[in-house]
Image (tube, one colour):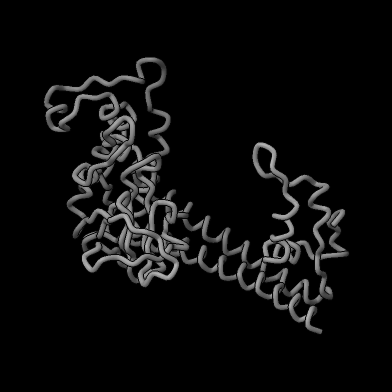
Amino acid sequence: MSGIREEHVNPRYLIAYLRSRYGFDQLMRERELTIQYQLTLEQTRKVRVYLPNRPVQDEIGNIVRAYYQSLRDGIEAHEEAQQLLESQLGLDKLSFQRPVGYTARFSTVGLSDTFSAGRIDSQCFAPDALISEKWLHVHARCDRLGHLLKCTAKGRQQVEFPKGHADYCSIKHISGRELVEVSKCCPAKDTPVAETNDLLLAITGATIGKIGIVNRYAQLAFSGDLLMLRANPEINPHYLLLALDHRIGQVQFTRWITGSTNGHLAPRDVGRVLVPRLGETLEGRIADLVQKSLSKRAESEELLEQAKSRVGKLIEEAVQS
């Protein structure tokens, strides 16, 4: 594979081939380990590519084209949802009104505020957190997250077991604001489980605030570093997902972290987070866009698997003939 010329090979077919088992295994074999694994151009040229006739390449290439289009559609839907939220809250103006310089590292707070928070540390009263909270109070009606939840539950650590009878997730399975490619386990009968449309929030470790929705599974056991948030009927969980994943929600999670060696977000503090309310119509529009974003991502994954599977079958048929 000395170069890619479109008259010789459909470049989108080549993407499918290199991401199939037959191409990917060759790439892994050719990589070299220095400080970390890497592939040089010379090593990549050693990869042998199976080339069916051009119409077949183009057929697979069209599937890959659709894969990228679905990816773009999903990204655009999420960006549109974010922009709708930000425009309603005037968050584009917030970034220009934040204080700068040395004094921006400190806040002046009253004694009543420290009693209310139950803390006096600088993290709890960081300027970013206080500015965001004040902005929300001024520009939107807000509810505390605790008032919008039907229930919460802290997970329980499980041993991952490939032949387990239940789906199981931890922080590593949160990707793109949903739970994907989860593991298996054999949980006890009283183990807490999350259901479709529940949110799972990371409350310990380096990724506190990372959040995803249960979208592809009916039930999930979840690890002890996750907190399940089950929305009540007053709010759409997909809108809530966007609000909490947005920086306006994330800065609030950061505010309430405790612990210096290993950070932790207590369930009671999660309930303090302010959630802006935009009315049923607007929240519904945002939720629909978030759902579309997740749906398009799943669609893109299916298309890529379809293209890879088609390549694999072609190679197997060529070997057998």
